[in-house]
Image (cartoon, rainbow, N blue to C red; front, side, top):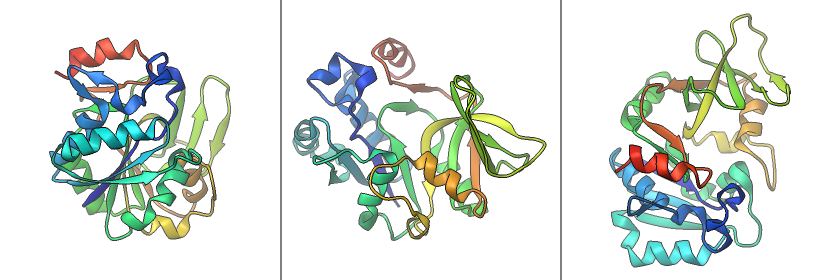
Length: 237
């Protein structure tokens, strides 16, 4: 099994670190976010990992080379010319991921979600994709029905709502930035250039099954802002 770590973002919320470094190399208790997530994937027996790069790409490539991929086979997907967001970045790396079910994850999340169990759940149900979620509070939510099938999206900050399937029992779940995906997704994506995976899922949810995998109660943090570092260091030694 392979995985892709999304590490190309500009990290604008993580300034001033990202004025001179990529967020992927921000250090939590002596290990970068990138190293921690490569090692996290190894615990699920995933040693072939695509990492996309844009912002301070050379620093990421140098870290991977210097540390021999931290024991994994790392393939760099180069987005130096233009950052393609989550969906565009995935499509650019598609040639490395078309063979089998794969994991996609953001570099700036840390969790103790049992990834092996999530993959097993996905393989039992075989949806197009399974999305890790929790019941935590956030500003934007995916909406799922009573069978945990994706049926919409909502921003509680702006009130914007996108309903894909009409159902009386929609419930909100916060996305954790980890996906398990079937490679046939690539043949279904119609978007081009720079676009989000949220847009992909919402465009497909009417006809395809996209599942929630709720891991509420397991340690999780989005290290999106500098103030999250102290909390991350308490949770992840």
